[in-house]
Amino acid sequence: DIQMTQSPSSLSASVGDRVTITCQASQDISNYLNWYQQKPGKAPKLLIYDASNLETGVPSRFSGSGSGTDFTFTISSLQPEDIATYYCQQYDNLLLTFGQGTRLEIK
Amino acid sequence: EVQLVESGGGLVKPGGSLRLSCAASGFTFSNYSMNWVRQAPGRGLEWVSSISSGSSYIYYADSVKGRFTISRDNAKNSLYLQMNSLRAEDTAVYYCARGGRRWGQGTLVTVSS
Image (cartoon, rainbow over all chains, first blue to last red; front, side, top):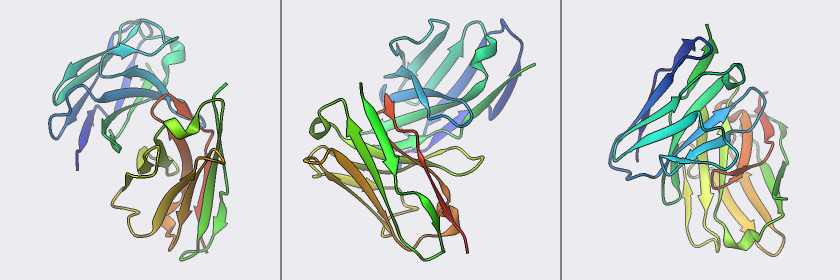
């Protein structure tokens, strides 16, 4: 099974800061990686698919990069509405694995 | 509009069974693989099971293998999760999802005596 190691587990940043979250796969997953945002009581929302593609309607301050085993998710300028928990997720055909999540707070 | 609506959650005793349903609308259900994902209170997302569009391929997380059964009825645009031998650690909100883009609102399963 493919394991996903996401870091940090929590992060405190100021409005306007650049925020970076990393995710490492236990084996090569090419670019089969999604990034999600989840707010309390809500279903996850897809932000980035195939490692670097911005989902329709998602603000351009969100971006993703990487391939193989190492991936990065970036918010270029943190906004108050970005407070949420973020997850990476790999998809090896129909076998999925989520990262542990990163809880993002405003400093 | 694509909609996924889960139902069937509730309170069940340890060792009991429950069947979750997910009603799909707004897209050609039979063309898509589907997933169940759960989230225990205060915890992260955990993939539970996936089924291909024609039910030929089915996968389970190790934590539920042998206890849960995923199925679908393409004629009824519905996805199911039969959960047997439930444990306290199965307590979670269960989401059905079509890929990563479409998620239901979730249904809460509580396993407690």
